Amino acid sequence: MVTQYKNLINGEMVATSDWLDVVNPANEEVIGQVPACGADELDKAVAAARAAFKSWKKTSFEERQAACMAISGAIKENAEELYRLLTSEQGKPHAQAKGEIYGAAGMSAAQATFKLEDVVSEDTDTRLSRTRRVPVGVVGGIVPWNFPVMMAVQKIVPALMSGCTIVLKPSPFTPLTTLRLAELIADKVPAGTVNIITGEDSLGPLITGHKDIDKITFTGSTATGKKIMEGASADLKRITLELGGNDASIVLPDADPKKVAEQIFWSSFQNAGQVCVAAKRIYIHEDIYDELSQAIADYAKTVVVGDGAEQGTGVGPIQNKKQYERVLELIEDAKDNGYKFLTGGDKDPSGTGYYVPITILDNPPEDARIVAEEQFGPVMPLMKFSSEDEVIARANASDYGLAGAVWTSNPEKGVEIAEQLETGTVWINEYMHLSPFAPFGGHKQSGFGAEYGLDGLKEFTYPQVITIKRDAVTA
Image 1 (cartoon, rainbow, N blue to C red):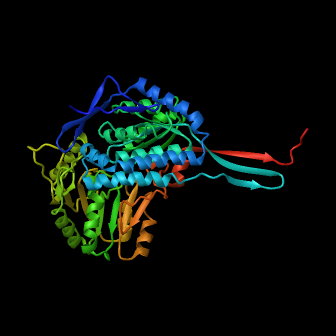
Image 2 (cartoon, rainbow, N blue to C red):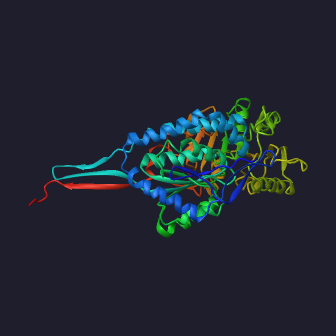
Image 3 (cartoon, helix red, strand yellow):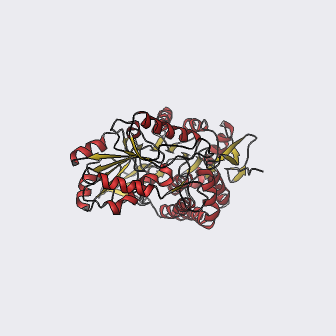
């Protein structure tokens, strides 16, 4: 019998009469069912969050911190169960799933240390003026399917630490681990402060348009982000959008191909390429292009593609059928245009599961779809460049600006190039390092606002300035 998971509303685990199937992308089998919520369930969750906000907004830093540390502890104490469940619904190998679960616990604990202090802007004989941060209210959080647990806690924890309450919607493709977490924390946070409900994609616009939700925090595609921004404009909801990216990596001629090949490979292929900041365009200087491209391709042949629950798997399946078909379409487009493949390009039509072979293209043109579009799959285009000015221009010639990287034996040169890239984050000689203490957000069409750090926490608040006139006339 398939396990049915319940939603968390006002401190209780509740079900609905209608259910959604959740599929394991490794074998396309149904592994669980979750409630199919609509407007009625959303109204109940929002009402619970609104009622809880009245008291939660008055709590101390210590009370908020205790609740968030309890969430962190619940994740850590149940890590093995959670990461195995995560692999079954998301597809990523156990090692990567374990990294997400422990990362979510660590991220929660780190963000529970952030405290927004009042700032005095004027302190004279005649006037005292200070700025305090006050919680926005009820938050609507919408989470994607690539890192469902990490993305959930990075919305829940800052919401609670700011004094807000939250209604969270997991992706219908990967809701199981989040609902299991909901069950684990139901008695660890005050009723109504955290509500987690599931539903089809149609539930998202209901959240965005709900009159009693004050802020939307969303991680997902740029196309959906634009719709959320439009929907939130009706009543000027506050928004934080962490959107798509077509992230460029630049490999300078002084980089050692033998040292960087494996790292560059995983910068693109971790989580089967389903990472918003994955390296999606690799620019390699022509002096080392042949050697490095061959080293990357040789390493790729050693990596096993398969079920993430099986030992030795390095790259799991694409998470869902729709994305699987889109990645295959991009590969077919490359084949139709005669682009050269160093590895991959084929699929087994008789197999089950959403597997795409590791695919690396050899110097396709800049206007190729595989270069110009965000692949979000295990596909990597490698391109040659000859000068710094040229490659910086090519890297910046995108509507996106989420992240990027520079690989070089000269860190100072790496910084010089990084400062010219139009992205929110640039790494030098590494990739995908996100600190809970540093803001993360995109430029251009890669996002709006920031997550992580004090900047991310402030996204859940309004500034309020209180001014006292000290020489005021008194009766």
